[in-house]
Length: 302
Image (cartoon, rainbow, N blue to C red; front, side, top):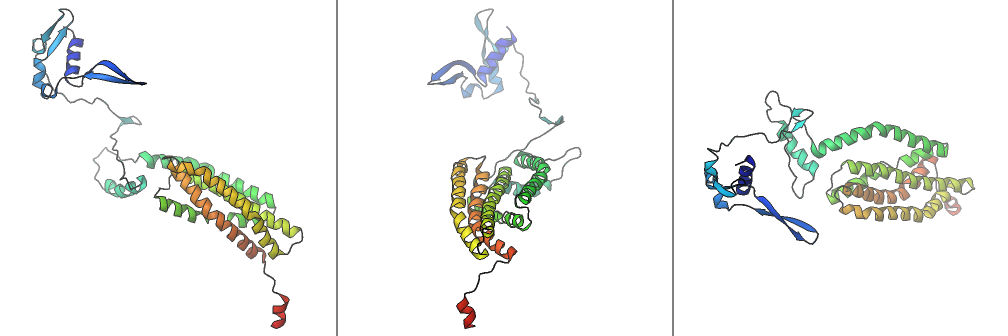
């Protein structure tokens, strides 16, 4: 009798042994043979099981080859992190609750627990991944913003036009917040990426509009007419460009990973595009002192 014979008998009596494969189309389903529940409910019943002896070509009772069974607890799998033994506790939020909402609800409760000496607590999961991603992104974001500001100032070779363009970017946060609240989606790392890409789209639309107004003024148009006519002429291109982007991001609304980014871009772009056509001409008129000329009849009447 070998150890392999005893091991096979124990596997058949507990977890079950694979005796074949059933093919269903392209799927291979394993066929598991296992002793009935009443024969594997008690450890003592294992002594009555038969073990196949390959040398004698017959079945031998288990109690003739095994004197007793001892149940001993063992660490079958020891998890380590940074070479330190670790216990990982995992949980999923409620169906109508985001991961960050569940984290904010449980974090003070867990951190209020008394940790024994020699133990430490660290947060992982989505919180850790977002923190690491934000940290890596924060190292390059200031440099990127400086480059974008430099390009915008070099494009116009002036100060007020770039300030008008960049004043639109913070206003898009309103549309992002509205979109996230309506869809109940958390502001995750992918949402942050969507917000950064959204700023580039808004700057592009504002540049097109401001450049059109400047071109009309250089051609000799009255400033108030240049602001009005330039805004009207750029309305259709800006709306069509925003619409194509929104329609392109719509399929990602049903993707679990890119949903937050899609909501951020769609909500922020839809809100900020309409806001751009109103705010940019208004801020331009305020910065350059553009005033509507009063009719001559009104002046004479006064």
